[in-house]
Amino acid sequence: MHSQGICRSADRPYTKLLRVRQISSIRARSQAPSHQDASARGGADLKQEAARLAKESAKFLVATSASVAVALSAGLGIAEARPEGVNKPELLPKEFTTVIDVAGFLSPGQEQRLAKDVERLEQDTGYKLRILAQNYPNTPGLAIRDYWGVDDETVVFVADPNMGNLLNFNVGSTVDLSVPRSFWSRLAGKYGNVFYWREKGEDVAIEAAVVAIDNCLREDPGPRQCAEIK
Image (cartoon, rainbow, N blue to C red):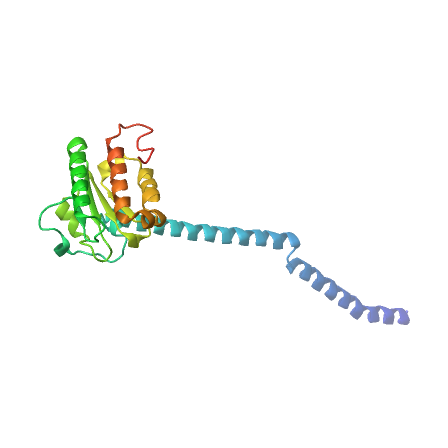
């Protein structure tokens, strides 16, 4: 009896040790993340990252759209395509003219022919085409707004080789409703690209663009209006 008691008392520390180890093992297993939990957290992290990237992309699009809106609302600012505003009324002709060439791209004869074309277009359609050939920063800039009385029926055509594309347009709201917006980009792509005007000359590109604008503004409204650059 005495020996059995000694054995039982000797076994107790070992039994307690086993229990402690079992409890520690159970706690460790309960605290350790399972593969499914890790995968779930990984998926959540990916979702959070995707949401963050989407949010940043949205901010970028909003900022870009806002920049474009500012450029459009600035009137002739989009034609100048420069952050610095230029206003040099001293470069304007003393006598009113619808064609201003401060860059020297056009000959006097070409200026006169273009002015007559612009006059006929305005008489026939009511649309006012105004042409400015410039070489930034040598330009009257914003001064042409009051000089020409730019309004909703005005198309300001700015030819400037420093803008990447020679042909740039500022279109009044009435014209914008009548002419598909793709027309202006297609026109600039055809006659304003650097390969065309460097080979043909700035004057040829300007005259070709005026002919195309004249034809477009004279076309009847419809799905095929201004579909071709003529």
